[in-house]
View 1: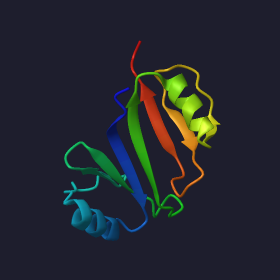
View 2 (view 1 turned 120 degrees about the horizontal axis):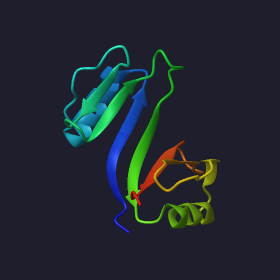
View 3 (view 1 turned 45 degrees about the vertical axis):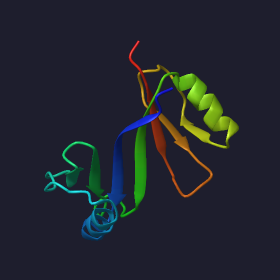
Length: 113
């Protein structure tokens, strides 16, 4: 399995604080937010920052992970305590799971077959 994180998204109701924190911690650069979505690209195309102030104001992080076998990754995640939020239909679709930790949602993608 490659298990590479190929994209990520951060949601924050305070994007200025998020920019200061992640920029200071990792040295990331942020593009200007698109309108009306209020979405800023991080490091050109490595990730994105959502302004969630108009969407309920929650904070979250989503990681898109490339796996060789989505079903095998799903099975392993459930063994480790994940709960499937949306059942797997096709391996090309994203998989939504919630974990027994502070990370609310994660996604994995399988290769196109």
